[in-house]
Image 1 (tube, helix red, strand yellow):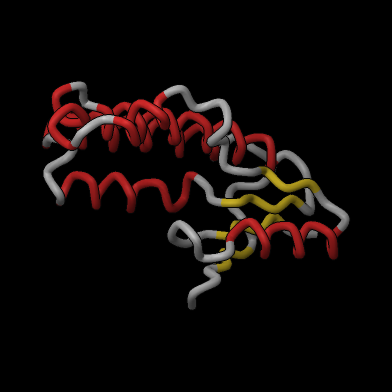
Image 2 (cartoon, rainbow, N blue to C red):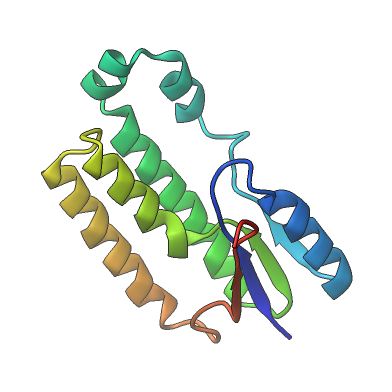
Length: 138
């Protein structure tokens, strides 16, 4: 019985692989929530200057972190779940935004502190981490 995370960049085939794994395991897939994310349209419709002025990159990272935290908590409570992206790779995307100057030093520190706090909460679950991480482009 396994919890599997499918990670990777946009367009790497995460959803297709997650669905195949889920079908073979007879399990649930926890998808990245992009449909109910009010920040995504604001982020993609804004100019780069407006994104930075309104801090959309930071707010979007916090929104994804919150959604991924909810998904991993639910997935780790049961066996045989598949996640289409997870909290375990979220830091990497935040770090890239920080390196590109889209997220300030203080925002990145706030993000890391929150992530550390969330990871401590996962320690109280019956399962502490996924069994496998799959990257379609590897």
